[in-house]
View (cartoon, rainbow, N blue to C red):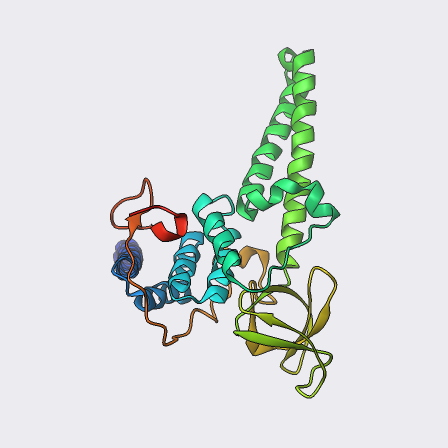
Length: 311
């Protein structure tokens, strides 16, 4: 009898302990995020970078965290790191207007104006840049349930064997096929994302993986390249116009690290190069909270001078 009573008691204690731990972790996450946002608001951009970086390393990445981190890097004129984190944010919140505007503005600040080419698949599935992998998966799952629900209903209930149900089934089937193909293509794009951002102020692109090889051309901070392969601390990179060459690994950083699975895109975007300290004095700025968000700034702070808002 004592064992029967003790088992539910132990389970209750365990449940309370787990719940308390989760609540404490969530509270600590909110406090760190709030402190980082306040540091950004007061012009202490490096402190804001440290706070956002801590959140990512502790397993709390997200589109708005990377967006905020990119903003803080931008304020310190670290345009390569800003573009790196903006691109990571776009994987999670691709339709965010503030993010896309700031990314475009950061690209305008770099020396190498390299336009990204789009292949046949990207041109055909043009809507994929505006949707995240999670959104495509949810849409495909909903259409899958809807298709089989209509099909089974039509098979087992005579009332639903009318002509309009048949055409509705065809429409849902077409949408289901497009959604499934879109999810598959997006998954492939994420798994094979070989882009990297040049973080060095100036990186020499060589003819071979040796510092004594011929310099073919140079790239500057913020340029995006495609990595073909790596060898002994060097990577063979390619530009959209077909130019290729070798660059040291420490001069760039992958937007997604090699080996990251699709399931880890949301919680394991590579945080290893999170804005190292640089002796750049932060400029004096003014700030406004992002529209529609609480004063605590749980998501982001907008920068008036970046958006062209007169203060």
